[in-house]
Length: 276
Image (tube, rainbow, N blue to C red; front, side, top):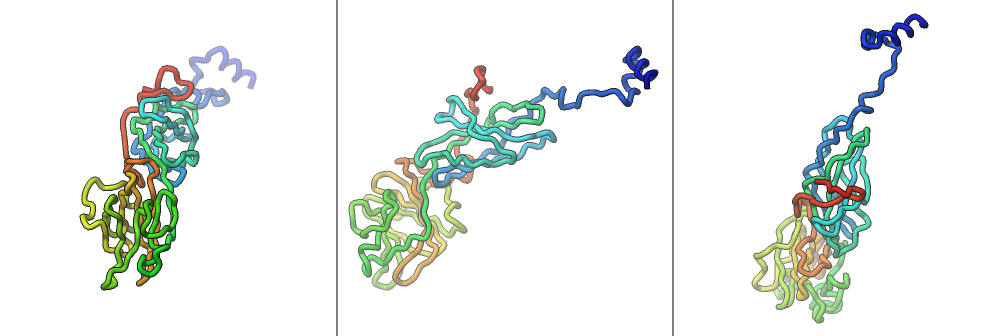
């Protein structure tokens, strides 16, 4: 051992690849290359929350992701959390407030990528399940719904956004008043398939045939958007799930796609030189 140690010390260049007992730092100790920024970020509007998903980075040394948020696209992006997987839920978001999100990835050596060039924005909104409306002819007090108050109301009030009615020939309809609009978006597997309010195609008669499994978008008298999906229907009542955007004029009801994108020319927390 003493002879081998002496040779290694005296002839480090000759025996650099031959001294099995010598210790060398791990490759990670020399890694100064940051991973590429994440791509493919999408957001999902939830009730008091926003879910983010993106394409998982393929570098072999990925340790996790940092999630950043801002109140403006080109503002300062502050870190709000971390994730080991390619998803994150911001459960600190408030309904009706728009948030801009970007993501970075870091490796086991502590190298962090730039902010993602995909910057998504989203506005959380309230939602509800299993609301029952009665045919307004049979029970006027339980025939209408007020999305702003999240409650069943009399079918004919200043705040009624939508009501249920059986026609004289027993055909079920969802109806809105003359200062509102409604559109049947067709059959959906769930409420979340409708990402946003449409720009055109509203019913000219201010009503729509009520069909189980169909989702409808309502444009209210005070310039808000809501959607309902009928989960059950009988001769006297319907049951529906709903979502309502509290931000006036904002068509976002669920964002299952990239709603906005662009380069995040902003500063992360602690990065005075900017991310890009």
